Image 1 (cartoon, rainbow, N blue to C red):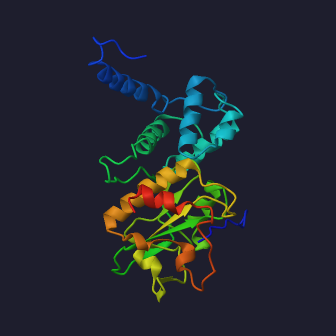
Image 2: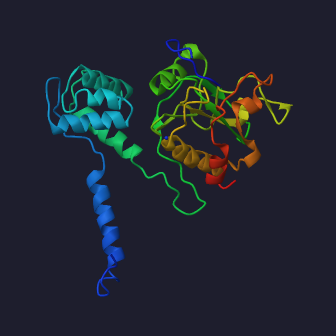
Image 3: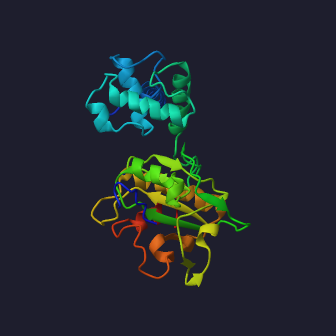
Length: 291
């Protein structure tokens, strides 16, 4: 599926005496460094007109969660202006908090929880084993029942734009009548719009290996934010996130490698769809998930 929002239409040798302890010290310093750079929510009590390190910390959190762009933050780092206020309001609305634009106790608690969720490590815990990567919940009403069908297919798409926020909004709009289970933004963030047990609306009229079937009922749909031109590179962050997500889904639902396909492989008639774009690196994905 190509997502098309109305506005667009559219990754020196250690001394002998210390050699035995060096690895332990390195591991400890790595843990300390990771802890010191972890992104956390600032204390509550920030509003329009405030400035300083705490506001910058708030902005970094909003960028991490996709409520501000890096460019918006760079235009006023550490300054709580209209763009920061708008981002706070959007975050409040998504978390069912009164949309005051003021960063108070409830908002701070919600931000802390959201940042902890997206900071969950996404690397396999064991070689060849995949855990579900951290996802940001962004529910879409555009789904229905699988009617008992088992999941045995994964379908990859490009959205048709490079505007992740617009694509996300369109798939969450009841009027669009389109959705996917997951969307991967340009920065590698993974949004879950439809639960795995539900049937998302992403494949349309389709067949699998030449046999007409309801692909939506038996598949997981993944939208990757990319304009589909074949000239815009899929990002490093997207490949890493996609490898982890597809590896987990393949493992969780015992999906055969031959059933990890693009929309162009299942759409009817042939040629109706061309996603993911021609420059998508299928070999990299297959190698990453052990195929």
